[in-house]
Length: 367
Ligand code: A3P
Ligand code: MG
Ligand code: MG
Image (cartoon, rainbow, N blue to C red):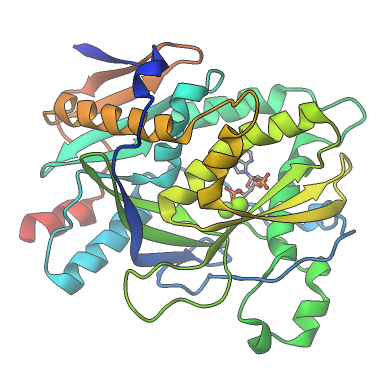
């Protein structure tokens, strides 16, 4: 039994935005330099302006790269939710629990044709839990690896490294005055390690759906506020090729859609873009306020996307999903590249696959 949600015509999602709740962080967790899980903010980083002229390829050979061939499901997110529920003695009031990355794909759908997606979902105690299909993620990865690099350009792995290198160049492990001079001066020689991450877990809402999302944040501008739920001055770090002509600018405005979606879902107010040459030399830095992005893009002659339509699409899709995923088992949520629909169909009739951990289910049975 399959059902489809129509993406086309996207014009029906135009108009004022459905309500969006301001995301509030209610918990956080960290992966350390070995990718071991810890509750709390030990891997949080502080933003510190990098030096222009830095070579983003430097240190590629000593890159401590996270091996993501193991399927991590929702494990860390569920662990964090269990810890939070133990503390409060109450079940969270979510309609949907997932990684921020899954919601980014959904919001981008009306304006994205080339990238499909596959997710697994299960209904448990009235809430839908959504994970990425690991199989699909690995297949996409293999396809991307086969794409030849730009002629005369660096290999893809090096280009991917640039993003992580930029993070290392732009962050400190503590506030500026708590960080040693040696560290600050040797930032360009620090080993780049993407096993280490700080993840924020927020409560937010789109349309009628209450969402609990987990996602990585790259850095903080100053310090966390004392009051729980107060806005946090997070910083999202991005690298992009320097803009040399109108075509480059057009591409950049297209990329801004994903930057914007990814950041506003977690309540990240600022994006710092490091512009680089085609050879990976950092040449410019631009600070962008997340909330201004949709209007900036709309003010251009031929806008490629519309923020309200992304939100309205997601609100309508989530509303429909909450009616469609109405029984136990494992459901697949799939969008094939260029397809005018998102398909939802059941792939397992009973149970919850590996989406939910034993720890989570055991805890919820007792609660
Ligand atoms: P850039 O986005 O600067 O290229 P994020 O920006 O989400 O914090 O991710 C940090 C870096 O991880 C990216 O830096 C990029 O190098 C790499 N990365 C993230 N998503 C990726 C994807 N889908 N494919 C390849 N690399 C990715
Ligand atoms: Mg990141
Ligand atoms: Mg980033």
